[in-house]
Length: 154
Image 1: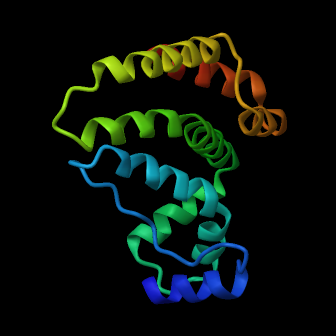
Image 2: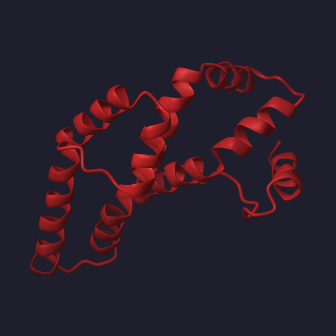
């Protein structure tokens, strides 16, 4: 399946680098974010590949069923876009914390304050350009409320 997927990407999405999904690793905090960013960038190609893929095992059948549900697919797309747009700030902080045994509190304080301000703006509905664009094409009231709640819980 892996080589079939990479060949599919080469043929149908030459604008994208053909690469496999980065599997999240529990001990590497940013691996989850990298997986979400990948899914955001490659989601349509994944859907197209699954629709053409002939070996219907239980996983591909489940994913195909999920992507046939337009409401679920749009919610997933909004969430992927939101995380992809706002998590690079968090990823940089995590990289700094993971990369050393030294205390960075004095260096990271202003960056954490900036992150806090960004999350507060998102709670009030101040999203980035990519998130606003995707919200304008979907049921924006429900999705906007979902993202405000996510920012508030952060």
